[in-house]
Image (cartoon, rainbow, N blue to C red; front, side, top):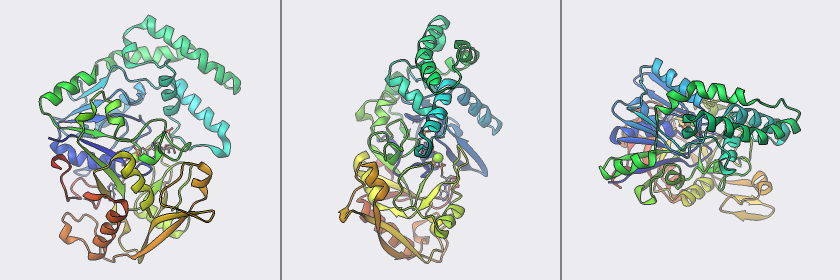
Length: 430
Ligand code: GDP
Ligand code: IMO
Ligand code: MG
């Protein structure tokens, strides 16, 4: 039996949440392994829209176990308010259906402050972060001063760790003429939520090991996308975690051999939220039209997402870097009714041709896309649930994408609803 890792193959918001929700019908466990509440995963189930940031998308299904692995950075207050928000929609979250790793680093109010301050200092060169403290929290983890979930159990230790942490952050804040933070500003809210957070805490790696031995099917849910990966993305316009499938093992404590299939979620066009290079971006009416039909507004920050043509070069790069076995092609319906569609098949820069995106941020910003044009289809694909109902020209578009990215479609999504999904090849039995 194959465990599946679901990851984004572009700049995030590819529809990972929807696909994870659909696949989780046949999984026992859904695990988040990186990112934090910078993620926004939207599911539409029986007319109800769920917007999830930290909770794994399996949470909305009864009888499924959701796990938050050690690779995720947790803002305790954000987690509890998300639990309350889904509770209002009838989803009960208790230690019976949610467990979080005791070694997860915490996002603290000081991280949010430093994130926003760093963006202000960057000025025009700002990354366009979600402002939620993700980057500074990961920095603290690597610098070995993070406060982790397990630290909440010991007030003395917690206080002393916060004191050490603030020596560093207050020096930064003072240098930027910002107000320093006090130990109590950090400690008091943590102590208030500690019992609740600790009720979910455990060694997730150990639980995963026993679930695997019992033959339970495990689904790993990535956040963001390969082009936002801190190593392989459009650095420095990236997030602060690795978003590749490999991060699923590091960020959960499940061995490498535990994941058999990597499903890359791929939008039928391209979007990006925040700053940074975007070779196929459309700043004209066509881009605005895609954004309007695709409802391309960020779940987390409400920002309008930048839209552009499908970039086969980027997705092929993601397929290779992340070892993607098959893709779930999403939002095909958004392209209904366009006279013609363009696909980027290469880049030109300074008289040179590229069949990949080079690492230099200068070149990334300057490459000129080389397009191939295809006729669109006048028919609607919206909500289609069978391959035979797709217009011939839409199938040609899909086939051309498969050829260019050197990877086949395993799932096709034709609408936001759970049922608007066509299974082509089953990732669990591949
Ligand atoms: P994620 O971050 O990868 O989970 O993606 P988001 O949830 O941020 O963004 C995807 C958006 O597109 C959500 O609002 C989904 O409800 C919606 N969506 C997902 N798949 C489809 C699809 O095939 N067609 C359409 N029209 N909308 C979709
Ligand atoms: P999901 O899981 C799209 C982007 C931000 C910014 C950059 C760094 O919904 O696909 P950060 O706050 O992480 O330091 O911001 O990364 N970003 C996302 N873009 N989807 C996401 O998540 C994102 N998470 C972060 O806009 O450009
Ligand atoms: Mg999203």
